[in-house]
Structures are given as C-alpha cells and as structure tokens.
Length: 227
Image 1: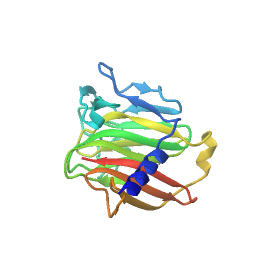
Image 2 (image 1 turned 30 degrees about the horizontal axis):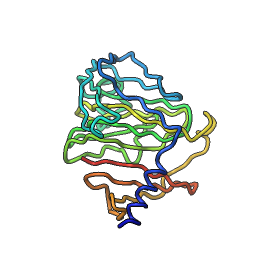
Image 3 (image 1 turned 90 degrees about the vertical axis):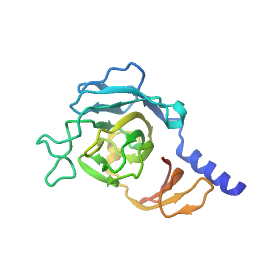
Image 4 (image 1 turned 90 degrees about the horizontal axis):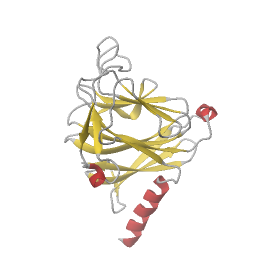
C-alpha cells in the first residue's frame, strides 16, 4: 500500500510545475462578451456572445483555488445558429463558451461545471480533441480536465444543449515560443489509475491519475476528478 501511495505522489509531483499559473473567476468580477483575460502570460481567454453571470460555488477542492464560476444564458451555437453536434456545424461563437489562445506549448487544466447527459467538447482550432469529442457524464460534474496545448492554437470548450460553467484554468508552459507548434505530438496510449495506484479500464468516481504516452516518447500525468 505504501509503495502504491508513493507512486501516486510521484504522479502528482510530475504533473505540477513551478511555472504553472492560474486564473480563477473572482467574486464580483464583471464578464461580458467583449471581455478578454490576459493575467496568465501566453494565454488569452475570451468568451462567446452571451450575457454572463458569476456564481459562488466552492465545490471544487472546497474552494482552495476555485470558489466562483461564470456561466452564460444561452446554449452555444455557430454563426448560423447550429449546435456543434449537428451536421455542417462550425465552432460556436454564441452562447456559454470559453476560448483560450496559447502562445507556447504547454499543459492546460480547466475547471468546469458540466451538466449530466450533455455533450462536452474541447476544440483545437475548430477540431474536437480525441478525448473531448462530445462525451457525457452520468451525474453533474464539478471538476477539472487537463490536456496538452500547442503554441498558436485556440482551445474552445463548451457543451451542446447546455450552459457550461467555467471556474478558470491553470496553464503550465513547456515550450519557448510559437515555433514549438511545428513539432507535432500525438497521444499513443492513455492509462487510468485510481488513488491507490491500481490501473483501471476507465476513469472512476473520485480522484484518478491519467497517464498519457506521447508519440515522441514523453509521458504526461494529470489529475482527473470525477464527481
């Protein structure tokens, strides 16, 4: 058991960097469709065309980092009024959605409120990431999702038929600049482990460790909490 706990501790340590910086939605913050957040270097956060409300909720980590979230009033659609899960749809521009443009390769952890049975997406320049291509959760989810990001790309997150809540994000750069985007890396395997280091077939309720092996041989280990 001790060996397994030490393994999990090592996983967590590998996922944390002194370069990580966080933006968290604050009490009383005013967010509109024209708001841009640039407090984290090399990341610009923008919002879909909507009316946004900041709500107090300390469900994630008992409010240690994230204690408020923001959500819009309408479901995301593209410029033609089409939801992303419909034929011919493009990247949504209206509704409760959150877009992060990054200037260096790195890792992004986003904190969200996701309603049950609603398709969840993260797009990279309009194309859904493999692990975030319309999956659903059985119960309302308060937690984080992590994924690698590339320099010069924009990552848009939202639900179809629902108004995603967004607490904020933590960004850890690993690259030195825009030129890093020329080095393409792909996920070649994904493994899940529970809190005692036992490998599982998929993410389970509670804290999971996700190990991703990249095409260049590097390994990324991230925390995933399923409510």
